[in-house]
Length: 128
Image (cartoon, rainbow, N blue to C red; front, top):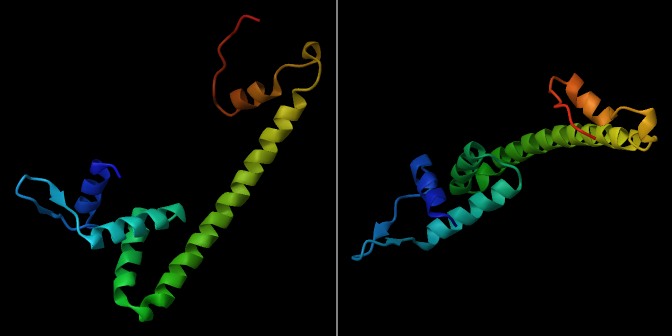
């Protein structure tokens, strides 16, 4: 793990600043390792650091926190479902544009580039 990431987690309050050895090295305790693993697993599930902070507090609260953790997970599932629908729509649009490129070159402008230009971008003139 990157040292800057660990320091960032300290600044955010996710980790306590570790004791330093006589030589000045940081001595991380096992609890810090468990916390970092928790954070990384939660990030892998799509949770933001703000959400992870809440989950860490819930994890420290014991079994009665399960309902709150479940509510956060359900909210995250809903967000992910929305993203999946959006990504599938983007994929379908891009697939249609790619498939339209199969016409002979003399019979088309590039629909992919034309669509992107119409979306507000600009296309540089190129020499073919």
